[in-house]
Amino acid sequence: MNNVFGRIQPVFEWIINLASLNITWLVFIFPIAYLSILLVLVEHTSQVLMIVLTIVVLSPFLLFPATTAMFGVVRKWFMKEEIQIVKSFWRFYKENYKRSLSGGLILSFLWLVGVVDFLYMKSDVSFVNYIVLFILAFLLLYTLYFLSDTVHTESKLTQSLKNVLIITVANPIFSFGIVLICIFILYVSFTYLPFLIILFTGPFIAILGFYGYQKVFTTILNVQK
View 1 (cartoon, rainbow, N blue to C red):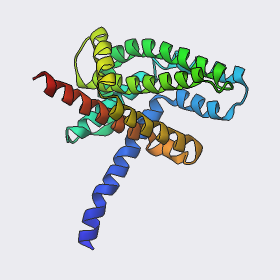
View 2: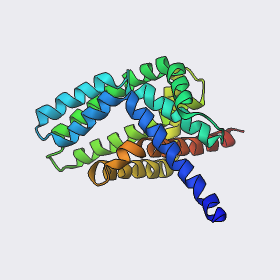
View 3: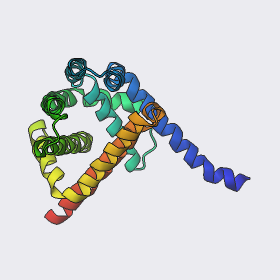
View 4: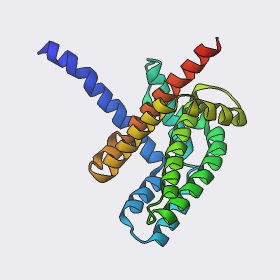
């Protein structure tokens, strides 16, 4: 029995850590989380646009700082450091707030343009529509890598935006494999298993995003040596 519990205990610890991080993140982005749920429920395009616009306005001030803090905690996990999740989350939140806000303003505007284009073209099954979907997937990948770069390096914002673009396109097959898994997790979470949104979805995405970033970032560094 001791042997069984010894094997199960790490699993329970990871479940608790993931859930604690996800719940902490949701508390910090509660207005956006609530609006995201409404976004799934509404049907009229005008309502969708209004909610999307509200989310975009709030994102630089709430979503990006909180998500950056979550990535900071995930980075510590990758470094195998023992941390207190809530305490570390709050520290990363304060340390990276201005940087996250500045980058969030730029990325939120790009997301607004991409989502509005998609909403107006989603009823038209055409080649252009698939291009818009590809651009949104690329933007998701770029955003994940930007958040990872924010907690992993001390580059200035403009330099970070350039570096992340290089990292995003450096290994396209691997990186788009990462983003496709992230999209699948989001789809399953919002469509079939909504309890994942409360407990695990955020950290799952952050872990995948940081893993992909670290893998490509390390490869680039090794090539430059």
